[in-house]
Structure formats: structure tokens, C-alpha cells
Length: 434
Image (cartoon, rainbow, N blue to C red; front, side, top):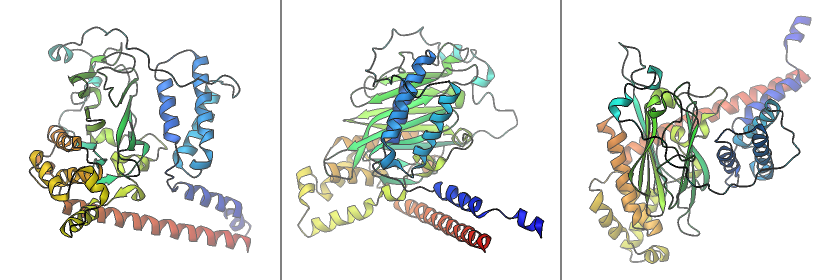
């Protein structure tokens, strides 16, 4: 009897478990700006410096996070940042009182480093671990490569080939794993519209063994640099540094980042006023999750949150219906495109009526910006270059519907499981009291 009582958790312990469990499923606040704090901290600490400078940046990070407390309460990234700051303060022996760094002005690029070695020389440079495919043991299956793309108003193609149109205004993470992090910032295309597009992009390549130093690449509207933030074009001074490099394809318009030590290629473009992003990455790297990290927050892996998605099929249907009735909405007329003229314009570059074509039509109707035609075109060109399965280049509405239905089923099952566990824990609390 006594052992039975001791084996039971106390009501307080059970309720604590319930509270922690429920906190893992926070509601997403559109006003939460925690990711802006994160990106500013990343930028200010991308180059190693004196401990005093790090503590100054950490205090600034702490101040930024505290300012978001009201709008970010319940957000997982916010609470993770709080705990992370406490740990870093302790590890680096930083005082909570003291100066805080100000937002840095962009520093001029440094003189270019030593020219990159040609590919023939690069293959003989660096240890095996710095060449992803060469480091794979013989007699094992070749790596499976996946693709994620983000473009237009914006449209997202996840690593699982799910195609979504999203709102996602502000700063959002696309990728975060043991090797790199990618974050975008989206701004409204037209005042008052839900349509947004990418105006900033930050990529952090984490230092990796004897291959590369930590590097940051930052691009924004009208600034698509051909180098990392420190002015270098490769991975630093380590032996395998040339397995990470920035290659400018078209000045100010098209940059390719090759991270061969993790088998990854990233394409960044500026089309019109906005940026596009595409990546080819081995499945093993995609799933290299850091311990304790909640991957549900990252768009390329799990897509946009349900409350951030736009069903552009309904939008298109309304536009077609309005045109057939001869009463197009005022904003569509102001943007200069009817449903039929938008289809004709998109058909010039995208002859197959897949979801890239449909996203082009949506973007023209919602913004009137003809550059989005080219954004959809280049996004599809990147698919052809980066996707490993030629049969999956095109995605059609039926594919998207099936993926959405499967995701809905998974979400409903998760919700059911969550509610069931909550009820069981609540019963346990009540039983303990009795």
C-alpha cells in the first residue's frame, strides 16, 4: 500500500507535466517578432570577437527578447530564446547589467581572399570528410536528395513536395539543422493585401570539423552580394575551406552557394524587387536535427502553419466568376490584370498549367507586378536543376489536394492524441486529490 502511494506522482507533478506538454503546442502569434531578435543576434555574433563584445551582443539580444514578451507569450521560439540566453550568460560569465550593442551598420566588403582553386584542384584538397559524397562508405545506397523552394507571393515547395501559398509576414525560418540555418523576412507586396514577398534572406553555415568556419550570407532587396558577410567567398582558413563557396552567376540577380561538405547547393535570386530561394540537400542533412529542437517551426520541413496558408484555388475561382459576370473587383482592375490576361501572360513562360503556372496567375492578380511571372519561371528552372526526380518537376492541384488531405489527417490525429492525453492527465490529477 505504501509503495503504491509512493509510486503515484503528486498532483503538482502531474499538472506540471501537463503544462509542459501543452506548451509544446503553442498558438502562433502573427505579431511575435522573436525571429527578428534571433537574426540580429546571429548577425552581431557571426564573427568571433572578444568575450566582452559577445556579452554586449547577448545583453542586446536579451533586451530585444524582453520587448517581445507581451506578443510572444506562448510561442515556442520565444521561450527557447529565454532559456538559451540564460545558458549563454552563465557559460560566458556575462553580467546582465552593462552596455548593449546597437544595430550595426553594414560594413564594407573586405578585399577578396585568395582566388578559389579550380574544381580539378579542389577535389584533391581537403580531407574526405569535407566531400559529402566521397565520405559515404562504399557499397551503400547513394544519397537521396530533396528540394525546397520559396518564391513569389510567397509560394513554398517543401522537402516533401507539398506546394503551399502562404501569408507569413515578417521573419520566418525555412531551415534549421546541425549544419545551417536559413531565415527569410517577408513584406507586404501591396498595402492592405495578405500577399507578401521576400525582401531579406539570411543563411548561417555553422563551423564543421576541419572543413569550414562559421559563415553568414545575407541578402536583401537591391543587395545580392557575391560574398559572405565578412567579404570572403569560401569557408575560411581550414583545410577544406573550398568546399563552401559563393559563386556569382549574374551580378545582382543570381548567386549560387555550393556547400559540398554537406552535399548542398543553394540558389538565391533577385527578381524585380524580391528574392527567391531554392535548395538541393541530402535527406540525411535535412533530418540532422539538433537535440531538443522542435522542427515543427521550419517551413521547408513541415510547411506553413495552417492559419498562414492561402487557398489560391478559391481566389482564382472568385476572380474567374467576377470576370464572367463583368464585375471584376476594383483592386484587380487597378493592378492591370483580369483573370484571362493573367493566364495569357503566365502562359508565355510557363506553358504547362501546373502549380507554378497557377501561382504566377495568383501573383499577377494579387499584386499586378509583372516580375512575378519571371519569379515563377525561375523557380521552376531551379526545380529542374536541383530536384533529383524528373517525374516530380511538375506539381498539379490534385497532388497538392492529396498532400493537404494527408496533412489534415495527421493534424487531426495529433489533436485527438493531445486532447486524450490531457484528459488522462487531468483524471490523474483529480484521482490524486481523492
